Image (cartoon, rainbow over all chains, first blue to last red; front, top):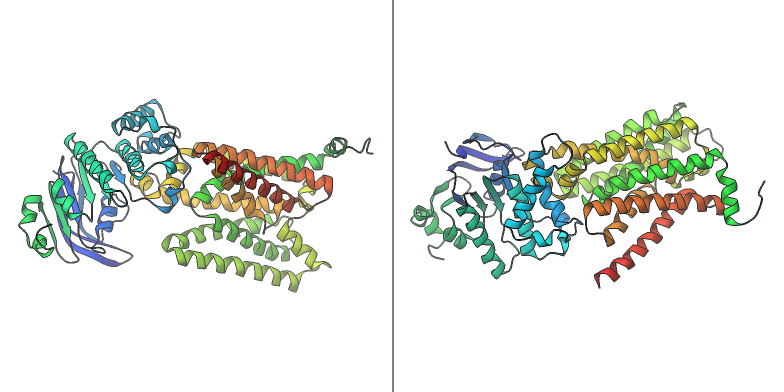
Length: 232
Length: 284
């Protein structure tokens, strides 16, 4: 049984179908990149994976002990967050909410988890800093630490390198690679196909009516890759 | 009778009256509650919902006065709460649609309210009535003991809700999708925030009038955001600012016979400018 298994998945919202015939599975330790044109349903697929939007048809099953709320999510930055007055500590700690159950406040356990992941992301020194004053790369590390607090199994990343400068982008990909090697399963929605084939173990390429899923090696031999121009 | 003419002496003289003490208690509590919610509303870009709701409350108050009830709250409160829930729902679908819906509802409620007041009012001084509903009246100085007790209970409930749900409210305010993905019921909290906002606006209308009430909600939060860098700090500082401005405004309005609501808002503006200035200095 895989972490996530989708069979003939139909995606859409408010009654409009965005993409159909999506079949794939995600196993423990995979590094899956979801690529495709704008409007092909990447974002909708991600929302379905997170349980925010229910699928319009087909099967979507979680397995191997992956609970519904055990997904760490790294969203795209919103306008609201750009000038949000919050300390790094407050933001990372909020990632541990799902382990609080019905208790209203954070306990020792949550604080220890937050500290561990901040050290892991090398941002412990920024603890008291204001989020809005950080650089783009630092902000991503903060959000990544928060996502790690929410799950030690699966990370879902939405276009994580958008707006980062080239040097920080490379560092970020290295960081994700390291997390993957430490045992985390990664699902990344990306525009950046060349980095996707460089780092990912599996590729899911979605279009409106068909989709490709397989290992990166298989992808490089597929029609989908050839139609993109073949070589990047 | 007044013993001496200094400001302190006058203050002492007024404080001897229970209605002045009631006004200060209620004013401080309403200011406290509105500032707590204000931080979330401003950060979630919901400030305009507060403004729209206060106009709805005005319309509801005008219609309610037709029925000659002993307490208008039985109509005003449910109508405003319903409007809050509906406005929030339209606001979530698409941005533009939500904006237009709020503009429509708030202007519509104002017009209908004024129309109803003109058509059916038995009062000899309609424009006086309208003016006091819009800009606040001396109503705050005529509170009964029962009204004060009601306000104390309501405020205690609001503060308790806020404290117990603080961590979840932070999560939903900072990142609704993330919160929802990790199992926080974001929609439920949004509705709760809207309902509590409606309740506070109706309570605060007595203090500042329906046109000025959203100032009580947004100014303290905006002031605090200029200088403080953590969410908890912003919440605490904005509560301090809000209570201070409300008390100062009420006292000044008694001493210099100015309108209560606008004096409080003027105090809020002064504090806001001060904090903007302080924020600039800190940055450099």
